[in-house]
Length: 195
Image (cartoon, rainbow, N blue to C red; front, side, top):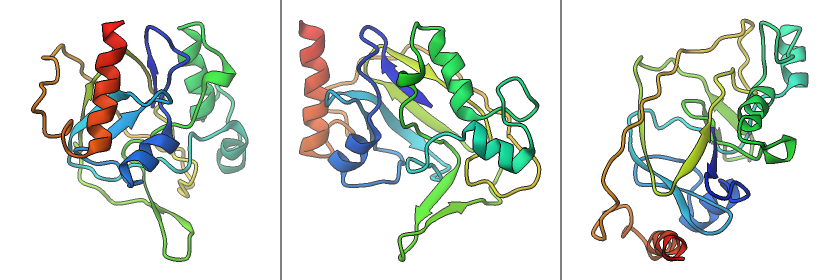
């Protein structure tokens, strides 16, 4: 998943700041997705999966070529990077706008020796994540196998996405006030909308 400020798409999800500001590299309920301008793009309200990857980025054509034989966008085995490129193109964006992303439901852990290890399950069906947009955002999704997926078959699980309009985040919100850094990121959003 890629996320952009819909009014100024050059502001986008920044995985490095998301990790650094929260002192945590594992997304779960209560965490923020931060932009490169220090603003909250989205908050994670609920998460019963707790297996998400912000280390590896999207799969690419060469990885899919090696794993499945043909990783081109219009093949049976499309890769996430090219699918994301199709998604951003609908908003006038291009290759330079396919930035590091979140791989939801694709668990990756860093082992004690520093190795990147995929958590492949098996997992219970119908896992979910509830996100709250804190700004007007563009969300681009690609449903493709993870770059570290070692299964011989190209395997994707159906994804259902729902969106609805909710209330503005209140001042006493627990996520907003969880840390000084979180509060600052929300204040940055409010300052942006005051202009």
